[in-house]
Length: 527
Image 1 (cartoon, rainbow, N blue to C red):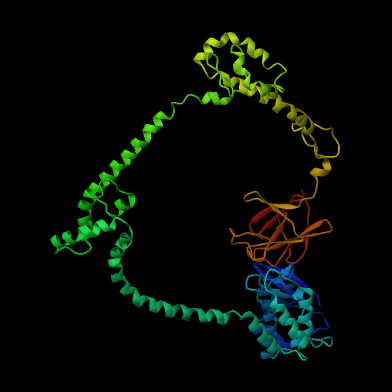
Image 2 (image 1 turned 60 degrees about the horizontal axis):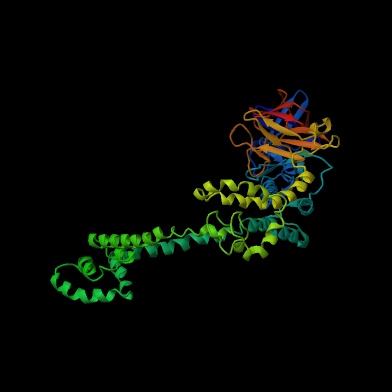
């Protein structure tokens, strides 16, 4: 059998050229050309001079061999198997010989969106036709396909168990098995709507009764008030007030009674909770007065707090002109030696790291004692003298050994500390990619078969902003260091350097090749 592809406008046809010794099955050919048979590709019969052609419309469909490239999920598998079974059953209904259907994954075409398939029926009488073993055909697909491991693969086990256990393959039984697998979740969804409707109807009736219940919701707000100690005062005052206000509603009585009670009895204390529960102008002013009194009480000790000026005595050194405390760790020239005798035992321990010439310059600065009295801030200048000799020595050898300021060498050659120059081998490393002219987007071709189209669940690069692109428009194939572009029966075709290429035919591309998918321009680069 010799098939070829032909592009006519927006249609792609699989063309079979009849040989001289081929005998047509006119009855089957009439059924195919005059009817739209489910599962079988639409068929045309043409003749040019003495050559006869049978054409099959496979526009916007790809072969199942391409469709099963990579990992196959449940939707794809069940969709293809259902399409094959439906085509076989439809052929029997239209009195077409099932053996004339080509069971080859290269000539079974699928829609990448719906996963529906169409088969090719070749109405040619031949002695070479054999009886089709559908069980072996499906079993071969199951054992040669890589399934998606991210989903539940129970359907795979069910299909394999049926194919291994059934003594005789039956299309009807296999169809029922596929329907059960595909519609396993259907009854669960059908039971959900009635479950949701019954509670909704029940909730609407009491919803009307709950509205008047929400009105006295203000009364239970007063229930937590009896749990507090000030409730006792309210209970005493409420009876006389209720007698005076007989005509008022019980909801309005509490706010009328609370202002006078709180102003007389609770004038000394007003908490935030009490203000929120019984808010009025008098309680608000009382709360502000109490809050202001607390602030005044806090500010008085705060002003006295900065008075103790003995803090510099805790720093461990004395100030000239004053008596040195007994707890100082070192002495200042010009003071009595008797005062320094107490810390004399601690002085050698502290002066040991400071002996190299830290105190000598301090003695020369003694004539500046007169301004020292006015500026007591000068003594802390001596504090950083201690950390300098202890902090800097350990860092010096670490900085010299690590060489943080030098440039790291990426290549083989070059000395340390010099900037590396990338060689020709690094620059010309093969990194194939496409550049989309519309937005200069870089598309890395990181798969042996890189698929481009607008079916997001199937392709590797999704083009959703161009309706002229087909669901599966083209593939970029890499093999043995060479790259090819293949048009997958797209509606608006694929162009290489301005020339349209034939569908399902590999066209070699090189660095700088211009590729056009419909009206979308790309450039292929190797680096």
